Image (cartoon, rainbow, N blue to C red; front, top):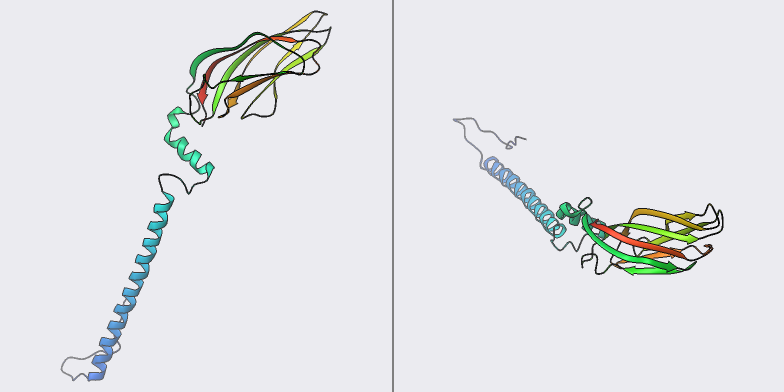
Length: 203
């Protein structure tokens, strides 16, 4: 926008003092207004900069847990979802689980010592003494998956032993524990093998 002064003067004519003074006063007012706008803009920039510095605090203290996990995910993307580490452990060999009973297995010495969440690849085989047509289940849960998930089913076609096998994955948190639970309606005890073959970081 172009600003003009209140009075214009023609060459060769006399200028009145009050008109000259009015022009100077108008120019000074406009300079002061401009300076005020610049001061306001600088203050706004400083406030934005201060706010940005706070939001970019490297300790991430002002971020929610979800926001921090996303930053961690970006920082350690190469360690997430997909990089399986092969490592074997036989948690149970020919273990006997009574109907309705639970066996707990600590993975503290199997998984890295940190606060991350891991997915583990497990395999289980089982045999149960059962009457003809009877079903029996083994369930599992972890400190991160608290609801029991069926991992193996055995069914007897005759009055003898029922067999079953399965492979699956489970999410394990900082509690580093997997529980194997037998269904309460099993006719007899279940003999099973429980092994883990690999793990990967998922957070």
